Length: 273
Image (cartoon, rainbow, N blue to C red):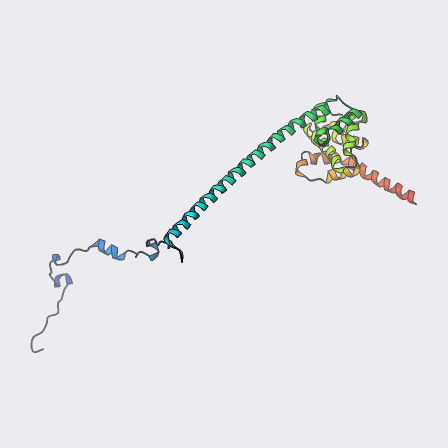
């Protein structure tokens, strides 16, 4: 206005102002980084430790120190008692395990001796029966007795007719051990099953040995029909060795048992009429 006027700068800005570069201070990158850095959270801050009051209400400092010292001693005594109890328990457990292991070793050694004596043939018939009775509770199971007898005496040459089961041999001793005892009679059959498995389930005179032996056990009163049925139904893992093959090879025997049972029922019905 009034004749004076301002000129509007034109052209590139770099040419509009000709200020020297030294007029601007250098950029402090470290300061900028500090500004942009995340602030420390309160949770990360370390608080000064706060001491719990030494004394309780109505208690002077000496009494408080005595109380704390007493508690410290009690805690130490308790820890010592607990450590002693733990050490004594560990020692008692180790002693019990050692005693059990020694007892098991003695029992195993005794069992081996008894099995050898039973199968030796030094005593047979009534003499063997008396010997078995004298052993009482330490006598091995029927299954172990028969399996050991067959494994040591007959080995790979089995007798299908089981002459060993006759009364004047081992039968007189075995019958009292299984009489009226289904579990003991099943043990007889398990022993035969496992023995035949060890010799490959052979055939003699065109008949499977295991089937001939089962028939002999029935004849010698070492297994009743009910025991055979229980044996066949048994699915226990410890008695599974050779079980399937034994079942297959005794199918004719079980067929005969079933037919014999049917004929007995018919005879009983006829007698009642």
